Length: 573
Image (cartoon, rainbow, N blue to C red; front, side, top):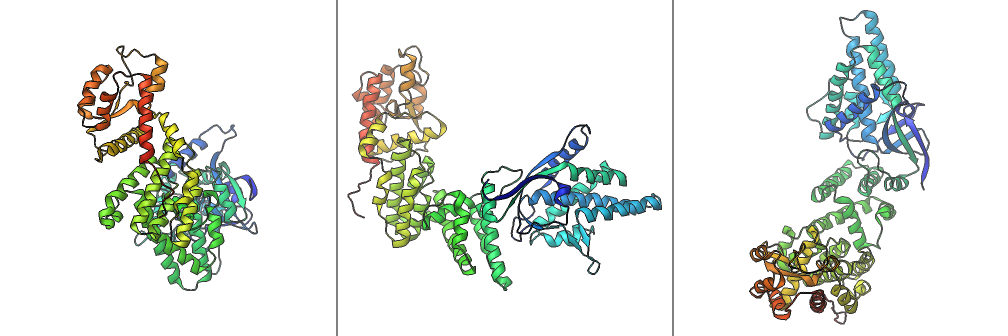
């Protein structure tokens, strides 16, 4: 794999040998494992240790991604949760040995032996005590929020502080207190506890991947599915931004300011949304970059503290827009007063389509254009997505380049040029032809799309808007989905006809329930009394229902659709 210096399989013992030190970068994710994950690890270990010794057994802990310039000190880019948990478990076992070394019921020889065992295991797997400061030079250094608690309480095996500690420190404390009684109950003497530690360091093994820098680490993350939560472009970006400020600034206040801004960004977006948001934001201001190259691209553009805070301020500004674009009912849109319903309706349709490629264009349009121009961009995104993806069935990724071109024009010049979208706009001829032959399988997603299509055509004919969420309105399959013998159609004709748009009509739900599998001559009586104009037209226009009439009706609907979902590129905005 490109960018990897070395890939090996190592036991935990091998990882901690030869004086190697491991550092979790200052601003990487805090400790986050909980009881469910501790129990999973414990059960895996117990099953491992109870298996037949003759078997070549071990427990695979997944990938460990490391970065180093000298092969003596390694930064843990991914795998810190697992390494930290195993180390805390070893500390809990050593604490059990310490307890036995002070147990009055044991002989002096046994107490001394357990004390020696504890000290030797600390040297091997935790660290060596400095003779001056009496602090341990630990083999593992945690991040800036966790290392003090780890060094001052867990490693020293003192009474664990429980007041005034952070959420992640409490998880570390709880981790220790989870393993401590479990080990003490399972292994009741010093020899068995020492054997437990020696066994797990030999039987827990990792695939270690060594890289030269964070960029290569990111390439690794894109191809691996290691145990635990993987770092994303947002995790890497956070580490990079904080390291820039930490390296350049002597003012702790700047780090605190950055922490507040980052926390605010997460509170607005949620951690799950952040990676997608970063990409859509970046592509609204810059040439399109793929997810795999996002971190590299941002890092090349952000080089100092000033760049960091400029980026963070813009991210906060655009975060609200992004969240609102994902939620048509967001309070953000209510500030648009009389335009609220128009915006909500178009965003609801885009959400229904599931087409995300327009987000970069919509973000910058909302920020830089006036309300009317923004609504035009919204409408054009709906029309293009409908023609290109929903009816055309074309690859939605093809839209991204065109949307990006239009977004950059808005960003750089403050103007919207819809002609930049012409190359992804399906022509009238192609759209009408494709629509006239389109069938939509009646899936849960397509049900709403079908109602949307039929409602839009009905509105063009009748002038009244139809609420596609209104359960009083339903979609009627004129040729039923499961026709009875009173429909004298062969199976192949049914299969190619039943999901054609021409075979579908809006109908009041209470009437739809009653007509079920009735033949066409009975159904048409109901259609003639419907409040939907397009449904009445069926009764007026077609005396029988055949494959030919379905084709005829769908051709007619296609002509209407061509005028509804249309952009006039001759108009200059």
